[in-house]
Image (cartoon, rainbow, N blue to C red):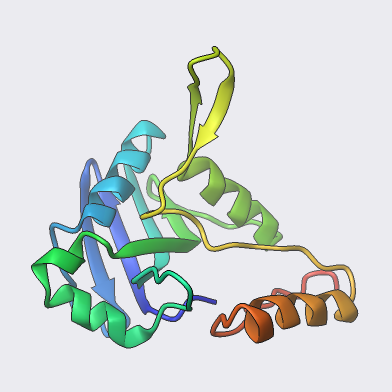
Length: 169
């Protein structure tokens, strides 16, 4: 879980509108929104509604909610804000309903990455540090969930975990 601001992004044919959790339109002209729109366009998406966290990446520590407010008020910091999409509500006018979150995550990874050839002619996947899905790991037991918690929260200082329990572990 990233400590930032919950946003709902409405994409329609190249234009992105970002609303906060109270339905208030947020900042426009952010580099991360341009990158978001670019990924949508390259994926051939005409319209989408996607939930994401707007956050300020930090070296050596976890992002903090207050960092977003500070960055939005500072022209130099605005372009460092990032988006972490974590759910798809609708694509091209159709509700995005799947059985398991791993399917949502797979689609997010597909939407927010590009397959390109490197200088050796090999196909590689490229992502953007300013617009990429939240990190996800799969656990098959409560002990594995605890290990992930210990690693991400206790050791690395993440805000917390979001656990989808689709396998009833």
